[in-house]
Length: 119
Image (tube, rainbow, N blue to C red; front, side):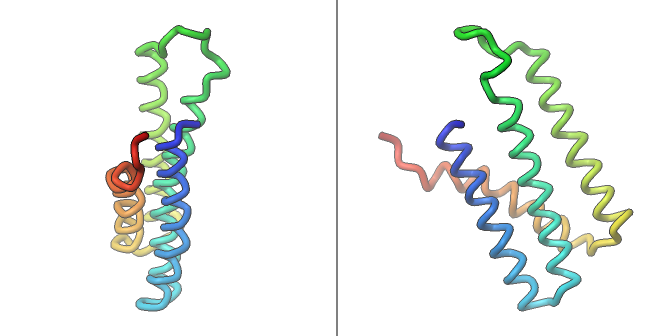
């Protein structure tokens, strides 16, 4: 796994814990569950990306095709949509907490590269 993606994933998992504890302390269990699920959606999105990037299925030296890229994008898009629908509709989580957690989880993709020193 690429070092940058490993960094994103580790920061998302740390954020999962920090956001849950912080939101619980400020707003209680209901908001903490929603924020936790939001960050979990972003982390699941990253895990799907890592799973699709694994080199097991590829011929060495052959780049990924456009079909693989589109399939990965569609899988991640649908997974996020289904999980958001599940959180908002099925689990009746607080929309603000859920979306805030998801946005914070995605924000890690912007912040993580800033913490890595290139060698």
